[in-house]
Length: 202
Image 1 (cartoon, rainbow, N blue to C red):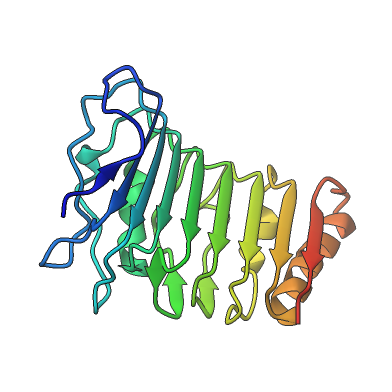
Image 2 (image 1 turned 180 degrees about the horizontal axis):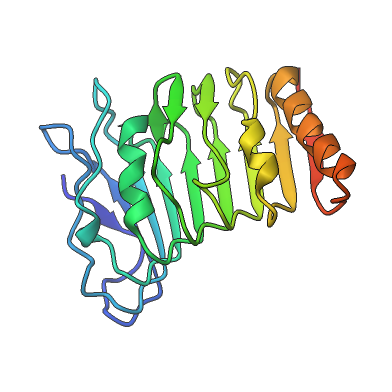
């Protein structure tokens, strides 16, 4: 079955979505080449056919250069594949929802999401997350929602001067506590801009 378009496929569209089996028989993320859609700014990919193992990302050239917002859901990618999205030069919002990535550890390494302002992690099985401010130099908002295994929020995020909000909802208390510590550290250095929000953490 081919992926279903959420919007009619026209070169002038700024928003587009695919819903359907987006993983190939070899375990690669698969959808039509959108590189020529110069006006496309928002893209949603919802995979409906689970793959039995961690999947791989696709060639970044399939994405339009002006893409600003990307949402992945149920794509089951290995966390190591996330570096490919750091190659999208104008990406500002990245949402990883419901098994978008699988595995307990996300170690970002040298990847740099240069323009990313918003990062949202929803319903993922991640347990450990390692990153530094160099990975997200312009991040303004981080939302972690129902990532019940996540032990902590990386302390390196507290050194991002543009960070304004950390939201931790439905997660471990240790993750929320780590966010609060980041806030306290910034306040001790005279920075009162960062706000931490938490709800129903356990």
